[in-house]
Image 1 (tube, rainbow, N blue to C red):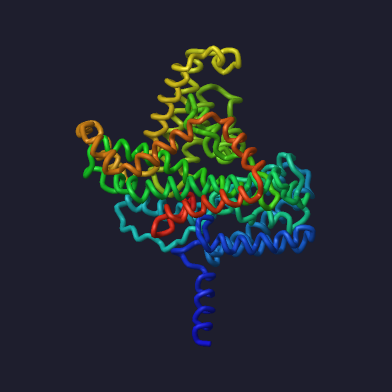
Image 2 (cartoon, one colour; image 1 turned 90 degrees about the vertical axis):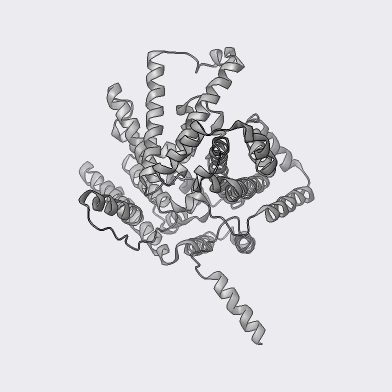
Length: 500
């Protein structure tokens, strides 16, 4: 009896909120809970209202495991959006509709400013006024940047008459709290998901196999690549760059670029895959971004849901391309600065965004000075491989340089890194580096090689997996899970986007 009570207490403790152990896709607890969830979900799939209530309850619990009582903020946003949307649907006066949009924007941006940026602003003011700075104990709710963006896009789309206000509160709450994308994206828009919610879909065999395929890809990206190279190499370089040669520092920079890609896209793959298992389809969020031949193309391939959101709800309202070239460039630069600051409460993210703004403006300016028809299908066919390779090489390295600001925690660290690369490169350490970090080198090189494989291979691989017998699909899944368990670090490493 005593042991049973102890076991019961342990289960309660495991299921309770733990700041150090959020419920993540790459944890054993999620695997167990999701398996139980999926069984019940399948039993309720034809009972719409009960299914909605069940999924909302699980989604709120999923969010509770990451942010405790802040799940009530998420519910508050659901209520606010629903009533503001219904209110806008009842009025035709433009000034009233605009006022409703502004109320929504002020509420959401206000939450972001308080929870995410208040201490940064407070510290900046204190530094300028030479006064004492004592950071306030403000806990950042997980995924707040994602669900506030989804909230804003819903109200703006109603204002633009792109969608009708949702009249079913449960359906809207289902959409905004839906657990796969809630913590780290993709930024799913109401106009894409609400029609699916209303349709109450059931996952087909193709969706199920594709979902499992994406979940396996996401786990490999996250655990086998991102976590492994981060814990065993990249973190060491960025924490103390002056202790390493310039060659090792440069390898650390390249390592971080593939780490951040595998971490971000790994979460998106798993979120999209889990949604597919439940019958819901999201668009791809990453599309081989390091194959880009220009900064503009990079942002059409990297975190697509965020870049298109910034385009539609920040860049275009500023004037977009419908203005002078000078104003267009200012709009573009401003949008990227906002996008950079969205990633975190640090001036380093702002610098990162500003650098990407400069790259985009520079690319558009060069295209204006040296007009080219290289975007046409005919010219693309004529482009030689060396030119494409050269464009990709230059773009990749420019993007890599900007990501140093994304990862480093101070300008002094960046200065140390550049100093080592410029003055203490020591290429002669390469053989020792490869020997000492052989597993790291293999994982990084393998990740880059897979990234640069032809894009049409992925759908063929998905189709091949779908056509395999069920026992083979299950066997592949088990093998991947075993590999993930063997490769995982001693401590669960959260997804990088959980802090945004």
